[in-house]
Image (cartoon, rainbow, N blue to C red):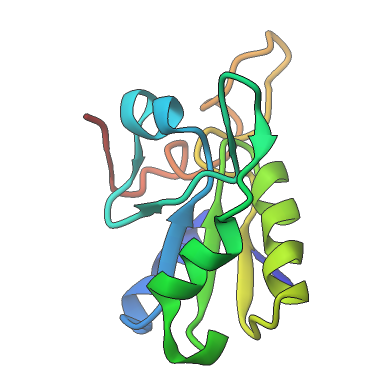
Length: 130
């Protein structure tokens, strides 16, 4: 799996329209915290029990088609869940998987706040919320 900073991920998506950006956070995070414009939501895990989604690989495979050869970029809050999900996709035969470093909200700052050090929103990339 390749790790790619948010600005490079955005540029990659612009240059490769066949690529998919999949947001692996919970439904509540995706809807109410916000998400990158164009991101498709497929939870890696979700409440109330926070168990890993047993259909994750199948849902991504259905979206990707083309035998797992389509580039897949994964994003979560900070880059941790998306990295774990990415390893699972690679084990399932996906060939081109990227983890968006620092995720949507980025790492915690000294006051334990996000969106102030790095991440998709910090970098000023397009996002929306419901």
